Image (tube, rainbow, N blue to C red):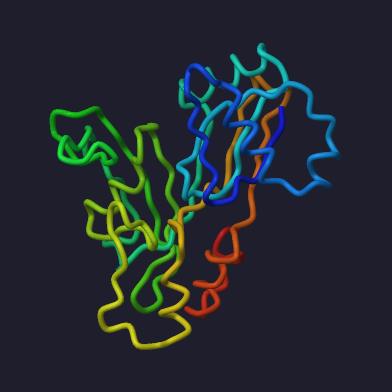
Amino acid sequence: MLALWKPPGVSLKTPPSRPGEAVVRLLGSLSALDRDSYGWGELHLVHRLDVGTSGVVILARDEDMHRELARAFAERRVEKTYLAWVWGHPRPREGRFDAALGPDRSDRRRMKVDPQGRAAATRYRVLAAPRHVALVSLSPETGRTHQIRVHLAAAGHPVVGDDLYGGPRHHGLHHPTLREALSPDHTLLHAWRLALPSPPLSTPLIVTAPWDEAFASVARAAGVEVEPLLD
């Protein structure tokens, strides 16, 4: 298998007629040095992230490993942890969102909370709560489309930069550096950590991915040191 850092803005959509297209886009986002370092061969995308989300993505080097890793994800044996900057301060500081989700028929791009929809659950924990925003750790227990973004928006705390579910909220925010940091060109949702099980791997493996500059700039402007909060 192979773990890669996906930058925001790279789409991992995989049309059935062109299953390898997402892998080509992902490899195209790497530096020439990285592309030449690994002897790629044939690669198979195991799971996906939203186009605006950064972070760790797993690929398999052969069809057998792809099948086994995909099964581990489907059976919820892979522990996923995301980080997000969100508007406001969720209360309580630790909890679980469990609203069912379904398509928003008024906008085909969106999902929404729907009591008749599919079960969905996301655990969350507030790591830091400076003025205006909060740094939140999120662990989805299910894998619904846009699940984390919809759950946070429904709770009144949309992800910073998420124009589809929240949009900018600069009312009362006068500090120029923080205002600029909170105007990113993508959603500040980051797939930070994956804990992969054994089997299919010979031993359990934890993979983490660094966050991008837009994510880090909010931390600097808000005076938050992220790394110590993740220990």
